Structures are given as C-alpha cells and as structure tokens.
Image (tube, rainbow, N blue to C red; front, side, top):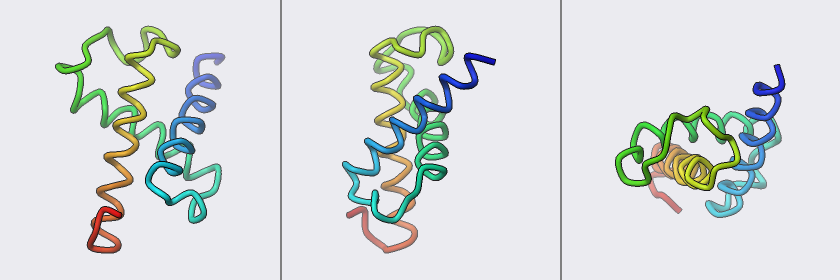
Length: 90
C-alpha cells in the first residue's frame, strides 16, 4: 500500500515538473499531473531503458535513473499530446 502512495505522489511531482517545462501547467490540475507522471514513467522506461539503464521501474522510487526516466517520459508524453492537439510541440 505504501508503494502505491509513493508512486502517486512521485507521479504527481514528476507530472507537475514536466508540465512546467512544457508550459502546460495552467491547463492541468493535480489529477492530470499524476496521470502524466505515471504514464510518462512507463513510457520513459519503455523508450529509454537501454540508454539510462538501471533496474526495473519499481526497484527504487528515489533512484536518480528512475526519476530522470520518468521525467523524460512525461515530457515526451506532453510533447506528443501537444503535437496532436495543437499541431506543434510548443
């Protein structure tokens, strides 16, 4: 149960930071930040596992590789969403 709570909190923080970088923070609430962070974490692990390395996604939530992978994945996710919605990345 504590792992689930940590994943939600970390997903929210990562999603919020990614939305600030992509300048979509005003359009998103906390719920969407959590979703972006969690889905971005999965996307980042799928796309970047060979480059950044490290263990599985759930090995250590506070490992720098896990956090960087989740952050990059969230930025990629927001870029794709912006590209689809607006026709440009931003």
